[in-house]
Length: 293
Length: 343
Ligand SMILES: Nc1ncnc2c1ncn2[C@@H]1O[C@H](COP(=O)(O)OP(=O)(O)O)[C@@H](O)[C@H]1O
Ligand SMILES: [Mg+2]
Image (cartoon, rainbow over all chains, first blue to last red; front, top):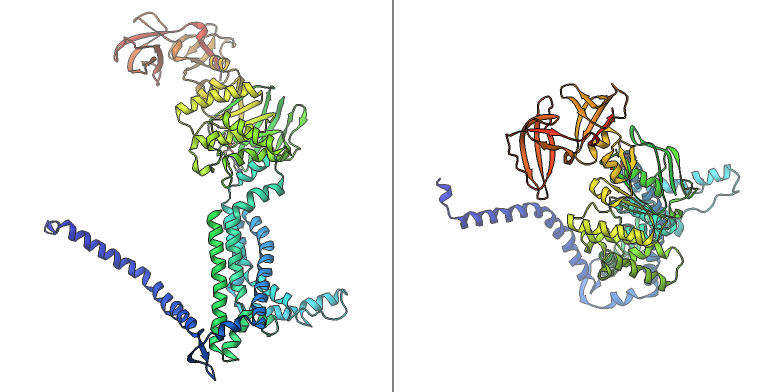
């Protein structure tokens, strides 16, 4: 009885305060993480881009635009465009391989769907580096692929399978294919099978049905999958380092080298910023087209 | 025209269809009537080519239908869930089937406009399905199915999502359309009034099998199986054995009926509520006490408790009735109004 005499307004404001507190409890860890580990480093990185390099790393606080003009040096621009190309090829191959895979999984009976999806993500349970080293062992001169081909008498001397752009693409596709399959699967699984039947009923063969019903309706999944593969491929440096023979072929290696080898932090930051800018443009394009679909 | 012979389909241990045989005539409005889950959709899916039967054959004008791929069959299906393409406008949905036919663009436009007008959606051509009401979607689905002018049109519960008034309008519309375009219609429904009012003939389904195929009036007046007697319209059903005068009930005595069955056959006697007379207190076949009177406007329902029978007997009378709850009445009917059904 005594409690209920407290005015309605104060009870309500107490409720509002405790709700705000509740939100803070849930948001707090995530926000702290974002601010400390993402926003502050990002701000530092952006600020580095306008200063000169220090002699042995670090920066000298003298303003300059030189980092940005260097970005358009054909040497560096070539690396950025080359990375875009490799990442785009890897994404395209992952899409061409991933779409049929996701489609078939979506047609399986429920029990097998789960098993197939677990199999798709299974590689993530082992160490990334170990899996990449396994490719080196497979593709090296005396490796399994070459020795099998020679045993079969198909080739006389080992093929040069390692340390070229094809190897990098292979590694990228291999590593990020699951990230393509999962969103595609989600999109295809959601599609009402009766829509395909309706299309057939109206006289469209399998190819037409795919082109005018299945593909357009799973396009958001296609875009998401492409983004999930493209983003980590574009900035990757471990795969080109290990499978590409250590030359600075992709922008990720270039950035790493600026910081660790050339000790040019400002230019490394500028390259990193350029990479982020490209990805943001892609994300916006994806969001825009997903909303239209 | 369409000949279905001995079609069966099982899903695991569920028998969706068992030995179904039907013959549907050119230009006919044919209804498949039955409770939910009795295999109606499965039969349509077999005709459309999305499902194949375990046994049986289907021919359309003498040509084998089951051997043809779904997209080559001259059969269009209006889906129970409509299955409209969500990424296309109403006009695009309707044009979809025509675009597969190599028609000129102007002709496609013309036919789409014409059919949209027919279903009253000419102002909605530019909308997407999610911007339409349930009834409008249903009409788009119908338009999409008829625009191809198929030889055989299958409709799976085409009017189930509509409210009563729109539904009555659409029923008339369907009927008019069928007269106009001369397509053979096969309509699935679990609504018997709809089947009665629309169809030239009705096949009553139960648990995957065909119980009876007949014109609506025949079906109503002469049900041939216990299921049909109970399912189609309201009926008073009495159990007993056939005798020359009708049915000999165990506790109710001789009930008049139109018997063609050998004496002593276990049988049911079905009498429609509107065929039963409420007489004075002493003439009539059965006596009982009125337990409920409900007035429905055009007719009244009187429930009469008869001793020796668990369920009250239902009597329908024209207009309002004078009988009151609690009064004693006698019930009678003409011999021809009692239908005997072997059990
Ligand atoms: N693809 C399927 N897999 C398993 N069972 C099915 C399938 N399709 C239909 N059935 C079963 O077959 C029976 C008939 O279904 P259906 O033809 O949809 O009935 P109706 O349309 O008369 O309501 C139901 O018991 C249903 O559960
Ligand atoms: Mg159904």
